[in-house]
Amino acid sequence: MNADDTRTVRAGRRGGRVRGGTVRHLVCDDPATLVLLAAQACLTPHRRLSRADRPDRPDLMVFDLDPPDTATPTTSPPYGRRPAGCARCWTGWVCPAHR
Image (cartoon, rainbow, N blue to C red; front, side):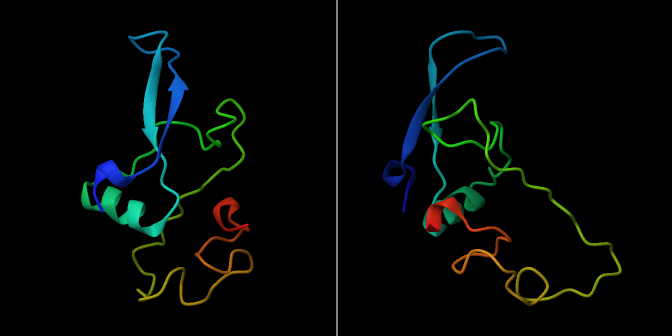
């Protein structure tokens, strides 16, 4: 997979040095796109976690809770068991991508 194979959405610009117009954002909604982004070391989000058709209404909040240095490392996310929620990924909620 390369960047040309990924889906994008356009969003209006607000703030920053450039106002007005639109900017294209890549949509990461499958494992292949996630691997592509990880390989490019660009997984820091710069937009709120909202859907492409409702950019002003975020519907997801993620907390990155790093374990303490004394935690036992594990080979399976998160800490060896799949939480209730999405059956296809390691989220604790029912993933909108897999509904």
